[in-house]
Length: 115
Length: 112
Image 1 (cartoon, rainbow over the protein chains, first blue to last red):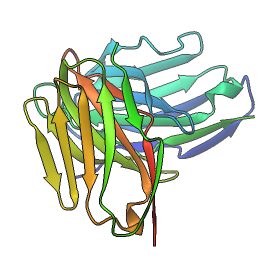
Image 2 (cartoon, chains in turn orange, blue):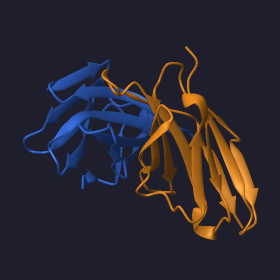
Image 3 (cartoon, rainbow over the protein chains, first blue to last red):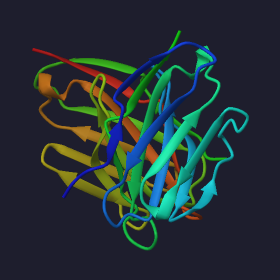
Image 4 (tube, rainbow over the protein chains, first blue to last red):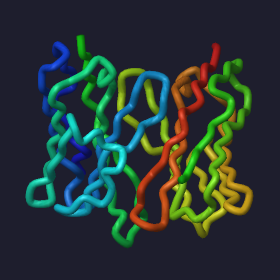
């Protein structure tokens, strides 16, 4: 079974530029999450999707971050314009939360460096 | 708001030692608790998942326990090996929509 796929693995940009990250969840998983992990900290939830709909985006900085999940499968997270403090690893995860075990599966992450 | 704390932040032990990592959470209304391992520059690998109705789960040298009433979970690692060196994170998911809250992790170093 294929795992959660993310790209790109690494991205270096200047502040005020834009960047987009892509995630393809495990087949059949209705729930998709984007987390931000700053060095030395645990992951912090940015946004949670259930199929096409947003379940929780309370910690997403909506003035600069946006995310969408088209057709309930792939998702894209965009940052525009980027700030220095956005340097972090962006992790995508999926689960079968809707009625089953709810086990989280993570991708390898996308490491963003903002200069 | 759920808060998850992991103590200690770092732990160094000699090879072969048995050890316990701790995770505490403030809201006992959880759906499940999951332990992860994270190697430097990598994503999170699931180790053990405990449903809210369960008390413990075992996988090889790992055993995780859950005490909802006290808001605690422990991860027991038997006969530690240098390959166990990594950061261990626990995550608690809520009953409403499966939102998971993470601790900041315990970084384990096992010395040969």
